[in-house]
Image (cartoon, rainbow, N blue to C red):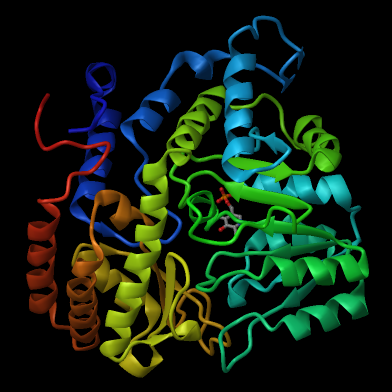
Length: 424
Ligand SMILES: *Cc1c(COP(=O)(O)O)cnc(C)c1O
């Protein structure tokens, strides 16, 4: 059952309670490899389920528009102080509703509609909000995009520099959603400085690795750092903007009143709890284990003939190009889900197929690491992925069912925060 228990919900709204229980059970029963997801602690779950959701608090601590902020000011200040300490920054805004609005705040603070902005192309691994055409950021600004080199699958910094020199963007985004390699923040900073652009490091995926010292930090290089709080950082769904004191005022104004109304105080509380967890020494072990698991899984997949974009990984993320396996990303992802292995289909750089039916799948090791799976389990996981991908190509449902049973057997020995097989 769900932990903490949802007994009141069960009696007041059994229909919804059944859905929550079903989702908790589903998260328990799957090997969750979606690179942007995790399992938050029960402490984070409790914080996000509190009466703090009842309170309106537009503005910032000491400068609110409604009365009754005696406690909320302290909650938000606690989250801010912890964010500053964990990441070593002078300023933190913990109010953005999610990663996309956090990025919008960077635009609002430093650019005007029609200005040139630069980011990684979505099909190369960038995010929609880095100026992709269907996003407001691609419609209201003039986007220039960099990609990766075909041979290496890595960002070509010479291309980034040439584009920056030719187009003189106001903002440069680095970071993305499908980048398996270390982001070279010093190199991006040098390019941004040369063309007088504001460098935004979007660390949504790798924030937990940075907090746990398993990936270099952009602090001291990027002018603005945006991040979600719910990916490797393992907090509730939300976001933060980190910066020097110098840029703090413009960013705060962009978030409120520029883009948002009242902050989600229950989320802020959950972020504070997650940051408290990230400050503990154990979190460094977790961050390192996430990377160790990804490297072990990448190696085991390569031994089985899987082609990995960039040849491997430095972080939590692996991007597989399935072209040589004779199956598209979508049917492979669907078959893996039936086998209890959950991931997402994904475009690979220079993908000849359509975004809704691309050539690849994306995997991440944050959730399974939180769950406690060790690097020694990764060869088995690679074997399951291999068997299922092969079975899917041959419509062999019996093999997929057999793997599903093996997955269930393994997971029974790994408890999950947020769900318990036993009634307390
Ligand atoms: C996930 C992500 C976002 C957006 O976060 P949402 O909370 O889904 O809006 C922005 N940038 C990057 C790089 C991301 O990975």
